[in-house]
Amino acid sequence: MTLGGSKNAALPVIISSLLTAGKCSYGRVPALRDVSTTLRLLSRLGVTIEKDTMGGGCLELTADRVSQVEAPYDLVKTMRASFLVLGPLLARFGEARVSTPGGCAIGSRPVNIHLQGLERMGARICQDHGYIDARAGELRGAIIPLDFPSVGATENLMMAATLARGETIIQNAAREPEIVELAGVLNKMGGKVNGAGGDVIQIEGVGELHGMSHEMSLDRIETGTFMVGAALTGGSVMIEGAWAEDLEAFIVKLRQAGVRVEEGSDGVRVTGNGRTCSTDIATLPYPGFPTDLQAQMMVLMAVSDGTSVITENIFENRFMHAQELNRMGARIALDGNRATVQGVAELSGAPVMATDLRASMSLVLAGLVARGVTEVSRVYHLDRGYENIEGKLAGLGADIRRVSCDD
Ligand code: UD1
Image 1 (cartoon, rainbow, N blue to C red):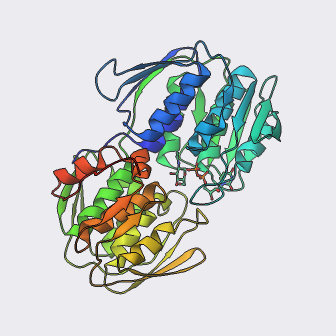
Image 2: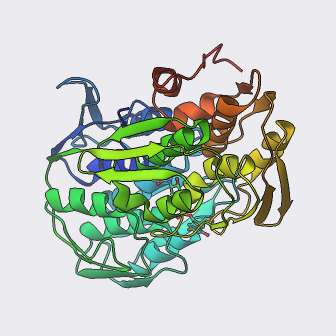
Image 3: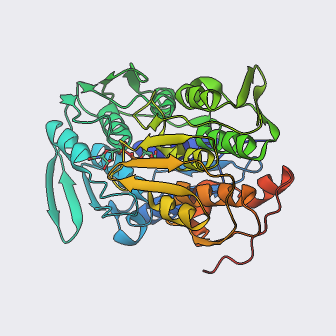
């Protein structure tokens, strides 16, 4: 099967085009709801957007006529990554007004780390009427120790620092591959970013950035999701172009569960090897086990021999799928950030409701192996992060149909 472009790489990369008046061309942009939300936001700010100039998945963005610096609530509330416009707008135009994201299904998700970092760079920040108002004559480089290696805060601060005066050092930075990709894009624009992928990132501010072109990497979370799908159904799936290095902690756990994973130069082959066995999992910042694959892995554990303990360390409320899986016959007990999953012989199909992006995917995966029909409602969550999911799964032999999309 063929993977799409990475959602979590694409969103900050597309937003980084706000940093320059030059034209930025992107390839392999996934056709996802979160990408269209980002484009709507950029268009509202005055960015010129040309689509598909070179074929599917291509975009050209030019931020030479940015007419306003406000990101409104209706766009930020549906997608937290919209908050990433704050750093670039502030760095380039000296001011920005961005709605606070508010709570969401997987926890409160505050933005304090983003704001503390910008304040250290000299921004004056106040919050009123649900908006963050940030101003800075000119941002200046600073040493910024992060309380937690937040992916979004690292991205926001890295983007802001490219146009700040002097040197910025982000300590305890997030190390995800998407951070490395964004740093690469900023450097293609003429930025001076060093150390991305490690926990200290050094950025030397420059006066101006220029346009460039970039092709998005393949989506590693989609990769992991299909790997779980193969393991669950006992199939053998070749995931073309997949890059196992970015999923090491996850692959270790799959192998412990008894799944065959073969890494080759052209991709990764995953083969379900009969009944899997339990294994404990704890989500952690990269390179640890990714929280974005926790829900999918829980389904595999739900039908594995033995009892697994899954600990969610990144988000405070990311077990909403557990109750729905229990309605399908799983035996999952929750205690704070810990789920104890006792493997059962099989799941049974049921009507279930999606609550967030990865949770909804776990319900689809459960439906693939459950006896009878599973009907997942609120599938718009899926469209935020999976491109043509029903087409891809049907192509691998799944019996799956989109019945309606207006629930
Ligand atoms: C990104 C990913 C998301 C992934 C997450 C963790 C994108 C678009 N989204 O989200 O898919 O699940 O990383 O790998 O790339 N926190 C604070 N204060 C802050 C910022 C974060 O307390 O200022 C907390 C959050 O509430 C959360 C934790 O830190 O509990 C991790 O958040 P963060 O790494 O920022 O995740 P996102 O960037 O939102």
